[in-house]
Image (cartoon, rainbow, N blue to C red; front, top):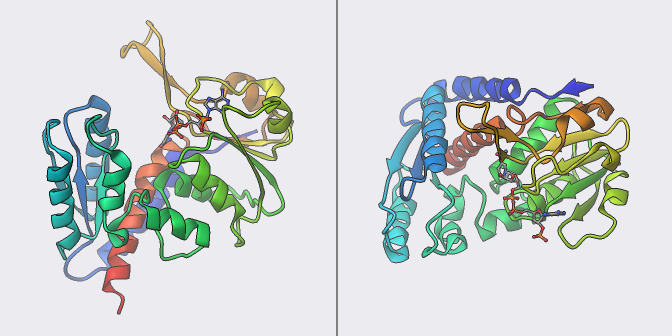
Length: 291
Ligand code: NDP
């Protein structure tokens, strides 16, 4: 059994991007990070993105509207960033406050700056296999993790648990693409799926993205499976300083011994998300610079 080290693979990608950005003469790629309010998880995610950008040499512009901002005011900020020629990528940190329509905000970001990959054009380009589009960072990170761990999906049965727009659906589309590294046979499961275990036991590669702590147990997988655990769940744990521990959607201690390869939580998919955001930002810069 091999544990796929997401921290190490992300560090390699970040080093590659740093080398690439150092070769850019003149203005460097720039990402605008928009964080509404002071949600503690969002504060820490945006800080991590800012730090990684700095490490690579990508300029970041941080915009911190108050939680009371209206949707119209947020649209004005996005319209300004969309027009600004010195901004290459725009990320609006989710979750947004309840009075703002998150999907409408994602749609407002100009497609050519949509480094988060959540707007309609970006998702459509994934379906159309158009390489000019931006793939959402978590599914892009999963494909990169698999590729760099020597997992070729061709002809494999990939079972995806979860059908969200940010993970489940795009990873299913990516695994299905007719291109090197993909070409899988894909099954997508969700809360209305019946006989779930019978399906997951057929998986050569199982991607768990449902947000339920340690949901996937030993009886749900076949020996030799590759497991990608996307879940990030906080389980109360008085022995931890924070009062909780992080766990994935997979019962790691039960499932790992059966696997050919498995991603841990933390240290698997998570670190890849920020690396992919930076890769998308450099791509947005390059596509803008191209004639
Ligand atoms: P969502 O809540 O948006 O979607 C969950 C999906 O799982 C839904 O499709 C839901 O089905 C399905 N589901 C829920 N319960 C079951 C069940 N018992 N059996 C089968 N399917 C079920 O979650 P996200 O996709 O946003 O996130 C999933 C997990 O991944 C979370 O833990 C999240 O924190 C984590 N995550 C991690 C990231 C990273 O960087 N590592 C990035 C993004 C997310 P239905 O559609 O029927 O409701």
